[in-house]
Structures are given as structure tokens and as C-alpha cells.
Image 1 (cartoon, one colour):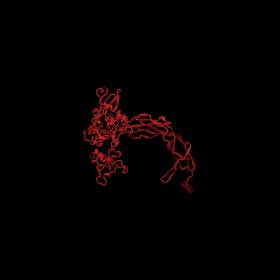
Image 2 (tube, rainbow, N blue to C red):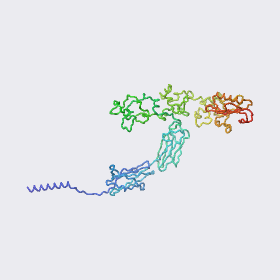
Image 3 (cartoon, rainbow, N blue to C red):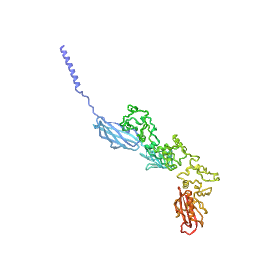
Image 4 (tube, rainbow, N blue to C red):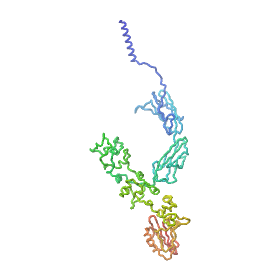
Length: 591
């Protein structure tokens, strides 16, 4: 029994020693060689991708636990070797991660399919190769929009243009431009890629116009540009932007203040305020009067404050920003014109649609320029009512009457002529009524029409010299007297004398007329001069050139507004005082 116990103890001890050795000594396992190359990820553009720009940076990431050898990178694009940018990853600010390599290659590629091939080795020489393809389908590029998007131009027939640049070739026949929805015939220069169009007629004034330009390239890729511009030929009514100007119309005591939060915000970032009074201490600096009752957890809440706008606050300071809290910006010049568009129709041929632009062109009865305050500080009931009710029609403040507030345009026709015509140009049925105001009041009107308008001559014969197969003779204006006792010619076109030494250049214009008398032997030059000076002065004319008293040979000029008249008196064959006397004659030039 003793031997058996000894053998058991020895066996047990041996097993314990073996177990301890197994725990202490490492156990050898089979060793395998690394034959795997790096792996690829983050490939852009991806396999079979279609991208819309040929300007692309081809990128991919290579990883390997045995480290990636950046010097072994070989890259080909469409079979041509290229040198990409290679950049290891990083573990921290000072330590590179050699197990990760980022590869970048900026390329400018034409439309079509492109093949990329990349090979790279790890630290022990295992190589991996990747190849893939993608497609560039870049549509034509449209740039240099003219007029610029959002621009305002004063030309009613502006140049509308853009430049088209395509990757390979474009289909010139596909270039299509529209203006306000209508297709127009724009020119295209294939060398410069410029598309251009000039409207053949004036575009609507004070109006925003929309242009679209579409084009397709040979591969079928299409693109379109759309932009807007505004035509406005009128000057804007300007006004100062300061607190004094604001308070001409807006009182601090009636300023709507209905929410603390709209002004004071939440003060989340004092360096990037999103509210005008983001900083509490703007008002409460070094003050114990902190409005704690208006705050919840230290922030303003949306309750109505019990204080008026502080007198130290600036109107412009709050209303000049683009806040997200509902505080409106002050109204700018263009915005003001849009807010004052008249609802009256049919007047825009001669008048601005925006009341501010139209009023800017006018003066009051004393010659003072009209301003914002002319209306907004006006105490007349009809003006204040129009502002309160937002009635922007012309008739809200002006008495227009049956002729729309315009002169009657009486033409002086007698009852026989009125059988077919009428005594007013506005209602004349044969021509003027159907052709509208613009037939006369337009830049393209005839010179004689412009002249007649400038001198406010509404006689038919001021513009029309013939009709019904007869020549018309214009009557001499009532304020140009003809000396009694002479026989006078009918008015003639003064320009027939243009170029003569005595002829004044101011009369070389449409509408200028010439009168000539017969000759008389016995008449006094000083008496004739005195008679004309007295009668012309009484008719509102002012002597501007010539002698202060008469003689037997004189020339004297008078003006009246934009009108002019010159009276000649001489006794010879010519106007030379030394010419032999053959009888006294009078001549009158007027316009």
C-alpha cells in the first residue's frame, strides 16, 4: 500500500509540473508567408460612373497592414502614364499612418469613356492592380450673361448675349434663345461661342424680362441658362437713409414693439449676433435696472414689453440688417419704386408706372422738386386717404376729367372738316384715335411732330402740309403780329434760306417758318420797330438780340420759352444798309 501511494504521488506531481510548463512555455504554431497585396477603396469616379464635368480629381485609397510603398505607385489614364499626388494617412498630428495611402490625380478629360489603371506594392513587395472606367458627359457651359442676372439697364433695346463653351463640339443648330417666353432669332459665332440678340423694338419699360438659352452638344448633353434683367429709363426718387429721414414718416412713439425676442434674441453667440440687440449689455451696461421679469432662465421670452423704443436706438441700426426674426429692412430706392406702382393703365407710353419715378420728373406750382414728403407729409384729405387705403391710381389725387388730365388737343377744324374728322386730336377717328398717343409722343416721331409738340401747336396744319390732293397752309400764330398796310405771303418753310449769310442757324429746323411782305415807299423804320417792340412785348416776348431802338435798317430777335422770332426791316435789294433804296420790306422768321 505504501508503494502504491508513492506512485500516485509521483504521477500527480508529474502531471502538475507538465501543466505548469504548458502554461509557462509558448506553444509553437505553423508560420504562413504574406502573399496578399494592398486593397483599394474610396474610388472616385466609381466603376461605370457618369460625371457631368471633365475637370475631375481621380481619387482612391490603398491600405495594407504591412505598410504601403508609395514609391511603387503606377497610374495610367487612357493608357498614358501620369504622376498622381500620393499622401499617407496620419495617426496623430506628428505620426504618419503608412498602412494607408491616398492617391489623387487632377484631370481635364474630354467627353466619353475613360479608363484608369493603378498598381501598387506593399512593404514586402506584394503587388495589387486595379482598373476601372467611367464616362464624362459634360454639357455645354454657359457664361458671361448680358445683361447680368438681376441687372437694371436704361437701354430699351439692350444687347442680350452669353458665351457657350463646350467640351468637344456643340450642335450650333440646337442653340435656342427665348425672351419673355417667345423664341427669338439670336446670332451665334462658332469661333467665340457668343450668342447675341438685340430686340428690334423697345422692350416694356419698368419691367423685368426673362431670358432662357438652351444648347445641346454632339453627344446629346443639354444645358440651359435662365436669367432676368429689368429695363428702366427713369431716374429714381432718392432719399437719405438716416434716422431723421425715417422719422419724417415713422414716429418712435407709435413704433410696433410686440415681442422681446424679435429684438433681443437669445444671445447664443455674442460674436455672431443674429438679432439687432443680441447683447443684453447694449442697453443694460453698468446699470442695475436689469429686466429680470421678462426673462426665463436668463433668456428673453416672447412677451410684449412695457417700454417704448429707446431714444438712443438707431432706426437704421436695426432695420439695415437681414434678420431672421421678422424685422423688415428699410425700403431701398428700387424697392420703393416697386411698392409705388400705379394701378392706372394705358399711361405708360408717356408716364412712368412707378409714382416715385413719375413724381421725380415733376415740380410743384412753385417749381420745387417733388420728394417723398410731398405726398407723405401732405395734409390734403384725398392724398392722406389714398395713402391710407393704398390707392395708387392717378385719379386718387388728380382730377383727370374726360381727357385723362391732358390738354384737349383742339386742332381748329371747322364744321365742314368735322364731318369726317373731329375738333380734337385725341378723338380724331380717321387716324389718331386708332394709332394712340405714341404715334406722336415717341422717339421715332417725325421732326415736325416733335417741333409741334415742343411749341404746343395742336393745329392739323402744323404737321400736315398736304391732304385731299391740296396743299395746306398753316396759319400764322396769333402772338406773331404782321405790320398793317403790307401784303404778306403765306408761311413758308424757313429752311429754304439755309446757307444764306443773313440766315440764323437756329431756324434751320423742322417747323421754322418764313414770312415776307411786299414793298412800300413811305414808312418809318423807327415807327415799325416801336410797333413790333410794343406788340411782341405785350404778347409775352422778350427782346434777346438787336438794337434798343429802330432805324431804316434793323434786325431784332425776341424769345418766348423755347420759341423764337426775328424781324428784318430793310429798303434795298439786299439787307445791306448801303444797298440802293428800292422800297421798304419786312421779313419774319419764327419757330
